[in-house]
Image (cartoon, rainbow, N blue to C red; front, side, top):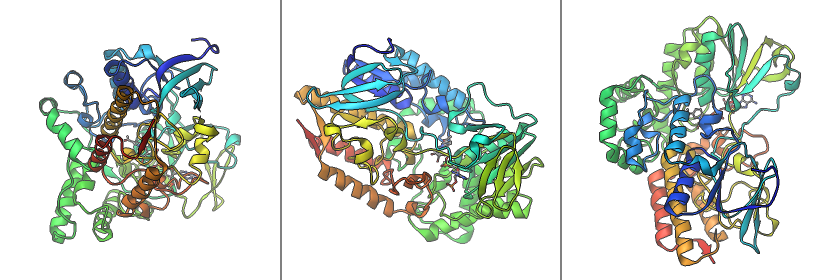
Length: 538
Ligand code: N01
C-alpha cells in the first residue's frame, strides 16, 4: 500500500482488528458480500491482547465464555488450557480466527487512523492513516475497544527519571527484565492487582503505590480438566443461552436472593463458598449487591476481613482494607496471590492518600512526607481514558464539520451506544451508552456486530443511503443510561473510570449502560423490529 496516493474505495471501513474488528469484517465480507478494509494501528491483530502484555495479563472471564460463539466448529476445534485464558493464549486464539476465516487479506496493519471525515455530498467517509494513505467508504465502523487509550498520569518530573518507565497497556513485546531492579508500580486496579505478584517474583524490591484501596477476589486459576473441556464442548448451546440471559454476559445467573434475607451464618457461608470458588461469580452471590447499600455492606465487610486475614503486617493490611467505595462499584478485580504478595520481604506499600506523590525525581518517586523511594523502573498500571478516549483520539468529523469533541463536550451522547446524531453511517461497536465494559466483552461484541450487520443489510435491501439517530432518541437514551446507573450503587464510586473521573478535565458522566446485557439485547432487537425506531433513514 503506497504511503500516499488516490483514495481507495470500499463499502465499509472497520477501525481495529481485535475481537470486534475481526468479527465485523467476517460478517460484512462473507455474509453481506461487501468490500471491507480493516485498518489496525498495531503490527498484529488482537487489539487489547496485542497491546496488554504486562506480567500476569490474563482475562477475568472464564475461557469457555471468553470466545466467539457464532461458529460451532470454531468452538469445537479450539482448546483453552486454563480456567482463565492468559494474554498469549488469547492472542493465539485471535490469530487462529484471523487465519481460519482468511481475514488477513482485508486487514492493513501499522495503519493508525488519524482522521475520519464525513462528506455529505458524496455520502462517504474519508479516512486517513498516519502514513498518509486515504480511503473512502459508505460505512465506517469503529472497533477500537473501550480500554485502549492509555492514561499516563501527568506527574511532574517524569521526563527527568533516570530509569525506565512503562504503561501496562503499551508493554514492550520483548518483555521487561525486573531481575535485581527496584520497581515502583503506580495503580491498584485490575491490571496492577494482576501484575504485582508476578513482578515481585523477580524484582529485587517492589513498591506498590496505592491511591484507592481495592477489593479483590481470588481467581483460583488452574489448568482445565479434560472433563470440563468435554463438558464445555458438549454444552455450547446451553452456555450461549446462559450468557445471553445474564446481566453481565457471563455463563452464570445472579442468585435470586437478597443478602438481607439470610441469617448471618448462612450469609457468611455463602461468601466463604464464593471466595473459595473464586472469580467474578462472587458478585452474583446475591441479587442486590449492586442495588442495596445494606446488602453491599455485608460483602464489603467480608472482603475487608479477608484482606486482614491474609496480610500479616497489620499496618499494611489496614491500608489495603481502607476501601472507600461499595463493593463492585469500581470494576472488581480478581487476582492470583495479590494480597499474599504483601507478605513477601521484597514488597512494600505506599499509601498515597496519606502521602501523595509530589514528583518524580531522577532517582525515584518523592512523596509528600519527603520520602524519596529509590527506583530503577516505574510501572504505570494507571488505566485508560476509557470508552470515549479511543474514539476522540481518532479525529472524527461528522456532518457540517461537527467534530466528535464538540458533539461530546458535555460527555458522550449516543443512541444505544451504536450511533451519534450528526455522524451518518458511523457505527461504534461497544460505544459509550452500551453495556460493554460491564459485561463479558465477546458476548457484547457479537451482539453489536450482528446488529450492525443486520442494519446495513436492511439499508442496502431498502435502498437507504444513510442512517443516523434522531437527536430526540439520543437524548432519551442518554437519560435512560443515567437512570439505569442511578438505579444501582455504581455512581457511588466517585473516582471510577466508569464516570471518567480518572482523567483530569473529563466530563463526569456514567458511560456504560447498567441496565443489563439481556435487557439491552431485547431493546436493540425491538428497535430493529420496529423499522429502526429512533433512527432517521433516508
Ligand atoms: O485501570 P484502573 P486498570 N496517581 O483505572 C491509579 C479492564 N481490565 O488498567 O482509583 C496514583 O482500573 C488508580 O487510582 P484511583 C477492567 O475493566 C481487565 O487496572 O483513580 N494512582 C487505580 O488504582 C479494568 O477495570 C482485565 O484512585 C493513579 C489505577 O491507577 C480496566 O481494564 C485486566 C493515578 C488504575 O486502575 C482498567 O483497569 C486488567 C495517579 N496519577 C484490566 N492515576 C482482565 O479482564 C491512576 N491511578 C484481565
